[in-house]
Amino acid sequence: MKNIAVLVSGGGTNLQALIDAQGRREIVNGKISIVISSAPGVHALERAQNAGILSCVLDRKNYPSSRAMTVALVEKLKEQSIDVVVMAGFMTIVTKELFEVYNNAVINIHPALIPSFCGKGAYGLHVHEQALAYGVKVSGATVHFVNEECDGGPIILQKAVDVLPDDTPEVLQRRIMEQCEWKLLPQAVSLFCQDRLRVEGRTVRILP
Ligand code: GRF
Image (cartoon, rainbow, N blue to C red):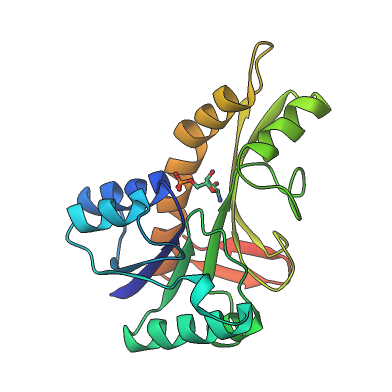
């Protein structure tokens, strides 16, 4: 059984999708062992508590640098014997100290089809504003391994939805969450926990 840590900073709807999937026994060979928030008082912490999952806060403000916070994070992950780290709306910069220990074992969800609308400044509603401003006809979500390059790690799963003529950033965001993010993230985590993801260069092979 693999121990999963979920890193959050906000509302935690993706965390909830993971908790619900776990309740349906869809996270095969994995267990959410801890939820770590980069800020106190966020709704995601309440979701963890309601599900009886251990949680803690690592507030960036309490550390002199991103590196110092990352070192504290790695310490916490080791203490809980974590095998896989899931970033579910985690808004804090982490440094290489995390990837040195968790190489191809940190998973992130991004609300666009990478390599579109990603990288610096592409977070939250901005992603969907950029997609609408560009006039794309499809957008979606990407689950990928995290490395030092922002939104640049090997892609695990992607799913697309149509962009509709009257979409606002909020409407498109909601469609992508419901139809893509909340499905893809639990699927990817379950595949990881079953040792079914093999990274070959930039390509992630999904084993049967
Ligand atoms: C999601 O859109 C996710 O793709 C992005 O941050 C958002 C987090 O939302 N990385 P939530 O906290 O899971 O509701």
